[in-house]
Amino acid sequence: MLPDVSLTPILAPSLLAGDHANLAAATDLTASLGLAWLHIDIMDGHFVPNLTFGPQTVAALRPRTKLFFDTHLMLEEPQRYVEAFAQAGSDLISIHIEPSFDHRATLARIRALGCKNGLVLNPGTPAAAIEPFLGDVDLVLVMTVQPGFGGQPFRTDLLPKIEQISRWRQERGLSFRLEVDGGVDLDTGAQCRKAGADTFVAGTSFFRASDPAAYAAAVGRW
Ligand code: DX5
Ligand code: ZN
Image (tube, rainbow, N blue to C red):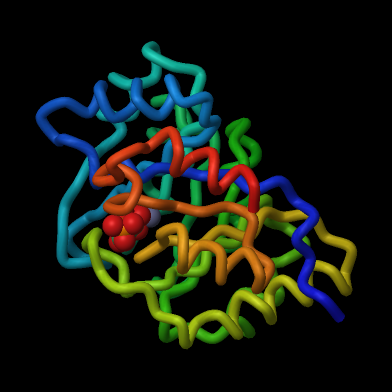
């Protein structure tokens, strides 16, 4: 069966690669190009060895834009924070499968708060780990690097995992978005698109692009 590439491609620039002294500029650039999504990485120094933003950052950016805030929680205890991010203005909140907490209840809670939900897998986590949740998610995020830092090389060995999840989606008639994050650029992103991904997080490659508008247009043609 061919991978399902019917969902319109979405480019989600990652705020992590923007200027941290001027996050408003990164947000405004994304909106000015007509893009719809902004990816916001939240790290707690426990689940990943880095720290980034909090709900206050999301709340501060919220009044500037109607961009869809795709909030990626890299937290050991995300269930403690979903309410704060929903109140801050996140549109989608994704949680990792790896830490121990009640994933099903947290996914339901995110929806009850009026947000879309997402489930994320690290490179070392098999697709089977999220398979029981596929009917209850708006987005699956396949990490194509070990999370924690931007600027790492894309891992092509994860393409079969994207294909597998895309196949399940098609076989079951589901419509969650399939997102990739880490080392995505116009070359690796196109490979993910062929594997069935439809939503592309790009940090370094987007914010360092000589022509971000041309970059965004190229993704739109995938
Ligand atoms: C990594 C983050 C990514 C990061 C990607 O832990 O989840 O969203 O911003 O950055 P690039 O695109 O530079 O790999
Ligand atoms: Zn991310």
